[in-house]
Length: 145
Image 1 (cartoon, rainbow, N blue to C red):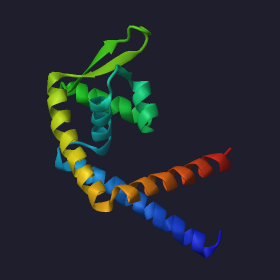
Image 2 (image 1 turned 45 degrees about the horizontal axis):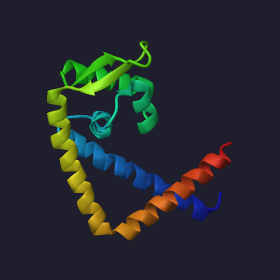
Image 3 (image 1 turned 30 degrees about the vertical axis):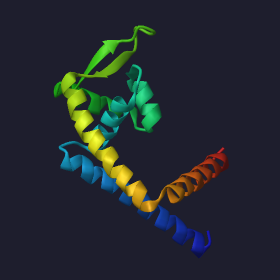
Image 4 (image 1 turned 135 degrees about the vertical axis):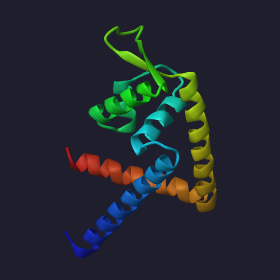
């Protein structure tokens, strides 16, 4: 690996870590963990029943981590589990009224914050960042085959 490539990758990892840290601080300021925030975000945004497996796939989170978070949220009466009508072996996760209220407050506040940031950065820059990140990821996935 050339020195320049090594430095680019180190900067990429630094930025990735800082991005995670921003969301982690946001979550902690709202009394939850980063993973709880991501799970609540997914549950808030979903328009149809979702299972633990769906959550893991959509958010690229480990099964055991999501399982622990869901049971912690259930203990706090923020989510409930319901048998899936399509597959009785699977449980759908639903926000309770308290979960909807919390998720609504926190996620809408976070989305407003994200919108402010995107407006500051600019839509063109945001779209370029997403395009180039997607291109890097697809090349990385292809190289790993």
